[in-house]
Image 1 (tube, rainbow, N blue to C red):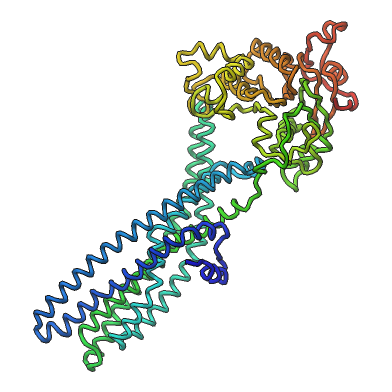
Image 2 (image 1 turned 180 degrees about the vertical axis):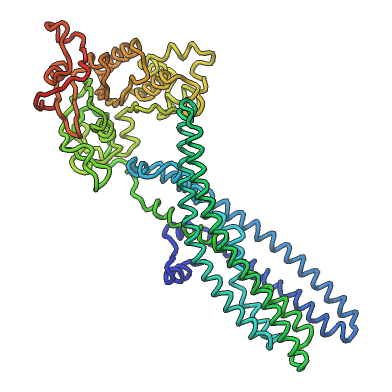
Length: 603
């Protein structure tokens, strides 16, 4: 089956097939050809029963032809049996279509989500991404379910119309008039239902977004007893969604019931005109009955079409959403060049990044050079751009201006797989995945040896706590690590980040859930790691700052000061030496200090 003619017809009416949908349908052409051929025979066989009725009334009853009746009954039973077999075969073919669409679309959708840049992924709520998988279900059900059978039956409606013209010409013109009314009704129903479905879908997205928030923040909801407030918000959004659903349903019902009434009126009109034709001897009784039966086969699918417009409307919306997603630019799948393991020099060359064109840049004009095998802290008030800077260094955000370099090579030319081997990451929100502790530490490298996993856990100072558990590294962490304490989750995330010994390690507030003793242990591990690795961490922890060679202080998206840790913080009035003659001694942070010094050159 060639879909080009279908696409041209659809495009002329403003809803052409999306390129991705055409690419999905082309490999299924042989199956659709089989289904179409079977539908042809099924619709031809449907003529058998009206013809049987016509012959019984006009020949058997009038001439008392019992032998003729016997032959007709046997023939129609054979036809019914063959029709049953064809319908089962068509159903199996459509099941195969459904399976192939399900596998192809869902896999392609997942692959697309995994290769989209983080900046794109953060533009939509989790509920909207989840809805895309429901869109994949809509595509599958529409192309392989009752709507697909309905569309194919409509193709052969002309067969029944032509047969009515042959056997009952006086009522043919009545049927033709009602057919025009049905087509108009179906067309109007399509526009009305599509608009109502859009509004209902928008309300459902808002409601589902709140449900996602409730699930993610369930601990906070319970701890602060927010159930009454959240229930009220959910009831409001649910009421809005239900209200739009009711309005959509009422509008749909008007068209559906109008179609059913038209079907009854068509039967009454055909019977009335047919009765007059019989009295004028221009039509037989059998011809009228057969024509009424054939009109049911013709008007039935059109009546279904009036009610099925919501399915077609959802299909069109789902196709458009998936089409926009598949058209999004992906991260590079392969690196432009294979680079040897970097030494770990990180350079930001006049980097500017903003989340939108309308808002001011989150970081602007960042110039920074971090030497290999060093330990650098990044600090600053909330909203100063620290986390955004870390994500630019990780290559998760592509700068709007400037370049992010590793050993002098622009990071944008490398695939995510290579970048993740060179730059380890410990996020501020330590997300673990359902599975064992070992699974989570080795998440990025499932082939890691036990020795590598234990080494990473030892560096993160979590090994002794893990082996003390009854199941050790085989302990299940639960959904998002819910069975573990915050400190355990954070240390496992640190172990995951250092596994594979990446030359660069980026850490965002790695001690937010650790006590003072654990902070000091981690500081010692980082000092040892920095002898062979470049470590950049966002922190305000005095314990960690004591071990850092350099510090970068950010304010409002700019670097306020940068240089050797103690000297830089002293120049800003944030620390005091204790004792003054020991610059490598403890750093004491002055809470609420007001720095007044000028800019220091980046390290």
